[in-house]
Length: 435
Image 1 (cartoon, rainbow, N blue to C red):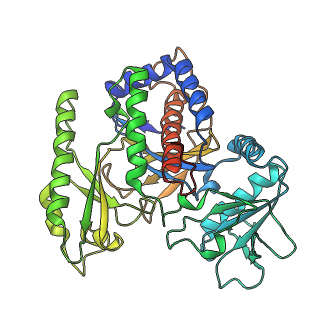
Image 2: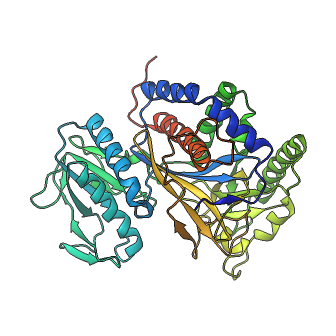
Image 3: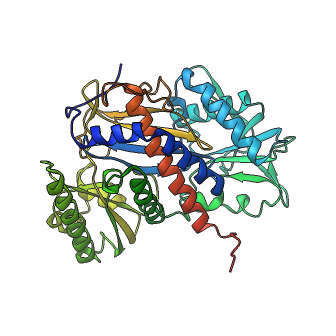
């Protein structure tokens, strides 16, 4: 079963897909050359929106937590990619320690940890799960709904190393976004590989750095394909000094919303698109969950100020979720015209090292095509990538062949992954500077 686009597949996305398929050798060479110069993130997941006239990544996660949504058919690819990634970093690796989030009661999240353990075990490593949650003082076995168990063990820190009792890993895999800050127990580990690095965590990372890297890359990639980079890149702006609770900086935010909407209207007019433009207002840090607002008009911004008892799910409730005063991102909203079982859907592409290893659709029956789907009630449909995202079908009409569309998703996902590698290099606190 292949999810379908509501828009008849004609127009710009059709041309874009045709251009991508015709340029496959040039695209793959371009990626190869990029990876000769830059190190891919250890693993990543990219949320993509397909509007029917535009295809763009809207969120790039460097600590993906939905590995349990990948099907059995995708596991061989993930295992192969894991072997390649580990071989590059630490060929003699024997022991791997996985550090999860401190959600020890969330069995859905722990099923993701169980899947990661399985992938790396099949890649030939001894894998154990070490919790940095102070509440975990002795090994704790948690039974998952599917019958599997995950054993969380308290980590043990020596002067320069981190491990478990009687388990000394050479590599530590973080599956923890560090949104609450970097715990001291993970700092100054000079003898072990920590993947991803600490500056990939949300205590350091800023979305504007990623969007800037992606924008630069989309211009170069657009030139390679001979397309308008806007077809794969959402316009964005950064608004500073915003405090919804106190009502500060609202005029700054309003002018940014207005400016981005004006640019998008111009593009819609240029391409003859009869949709209502909108923007997404979100925080600089964290995955695009609560605290993401859809705004169609700059006037709506004033209604977000200081409403303490807003109904859940309302824009004012989302404004409260934006953490404290500071910066927000105003990003061009990309409609999603994908549907699965009549629910609005968006593809999520999972990658490890430089390889697309699979993906799934995030589906939400109660959300509109211009809303954020990362919210309670979302379901995950692990289909669509049943045929590899690496295998386009030359000669098949755009839109007619599922692997063609999935190849295109893989290209856009990998483009966001290259942007993440640029972003990590630019923000690396230990980078060597050559004058």
